[in-house]
Length: 112
Figure 1 (tube, one colour):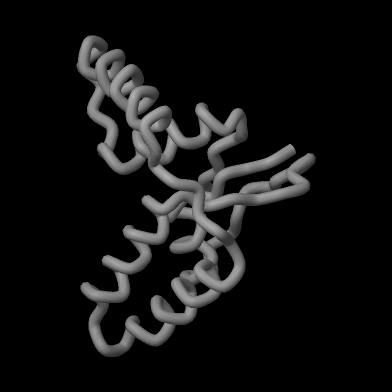
Figure 2 (tube, rainbow, N blue to C red; figure 1 turned 135 degrees about the vertical axis):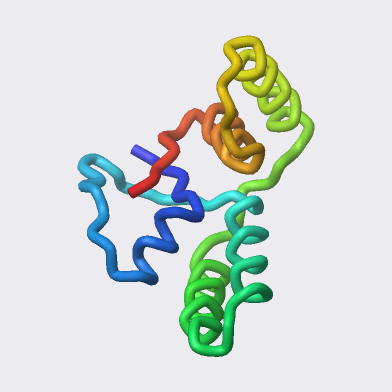
């Protein structure tokens, strides 16, 4: 089974927090959204945290070819965002983009 790792997975790894079991996962992917969020983390980090954030971003960029946000993902994002809005549920917009990517790819979205 393929899984899409989101930013919180890498933040948990970086901080040494325990991760949930990923039983049955044989392949992992990341979204361009995760790369953007990790890059923002590097740019906003203080001097003490920056080296770890750079290392995490570098590892992600050298390990995965990120899945894009293309027109199909954009349409799925709009459908999911509309449902969430109708249900008055607040979900961070970038999390909805990552979820839409996973839905289009037919893969599990993973957080710790």
